[in-house]
Image (cartoon, rainbow, N blue to C red):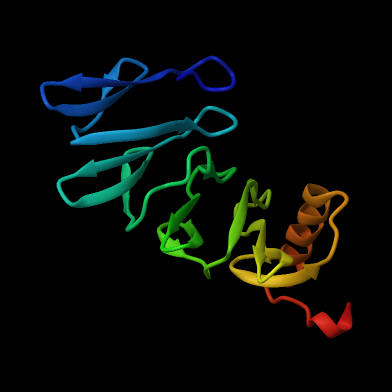
Length: 176
């Protein structure tokens, strides 16, 4: 896998019955299994899913974050400051977003391509479905229920900016 800028590479290799990730020629720790490998948008951070025995983790720049479900493919999102990781999991008919290993509330569906950190890396927003309603979610809280989203990512960015200004306290829906 190459990062978007083409400066870095990562490769999953087998060593006996173990897997490891080699990043820019440097081998990482061994695992029983390594899943999806993804670079951040600027190529400075690397995240991947791995298993060692019964332990299931996501590794961000060498730091292991325990998880209890399988990661939804292509859902890794690394924050702009490279210190935070968001991803989606699916288990028992529910979608969960994990941020730094902590789960957000369950939804019927999460639009993984909308997972986005605010520019300061403090907030995470995304679009989700629950009971037939399209929801704007910021930091695990429902900010808005929408009927139609003509420009979903633009609306999400507007809510992330609003979350930065209000310290993450969602406005009351009646005030909208």
